[in-house]
Length: 157
Image (cartoon, rainbow, N blue to C red; front, side):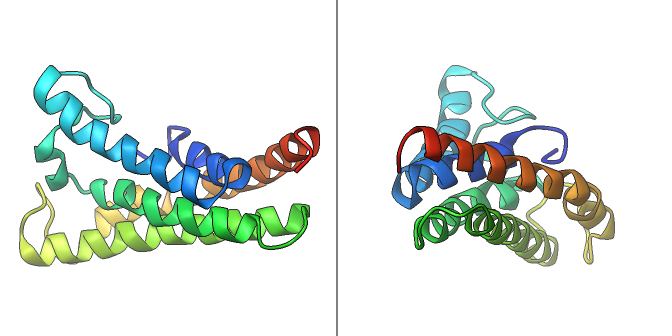
């Protein structure tokens, strides 16, 4: 699940330090490798395996949300001169995008019937993937903001 791992923090950190394009490309590579490396070579990339059938997992929408979240977070992180507040807001925007994409995928997948063991309105999945991990992810946003601020100070940009 997204709340237990540091995936979200890694997405936001990459965006705040490397920028929108590098962060989005990294997430595209991550999702692509997770879908195809497991499918053809058996290497588990995602926390619960991988492969093309992973699109039937309720958490897949959150993984897809990493891509626009990385781009949006990276975009806003570099709009102004370096400030801790800018990085914090950028990370919050990214987190909101991740949860928005995940919730949209849950809704569409449960209505469309392509998700494994999920029926509309999917309250259990909403609780498990969005509400329960949110406090920890908000703490992670704070940590990412501070670490990204320090790294960018050290790297002079």
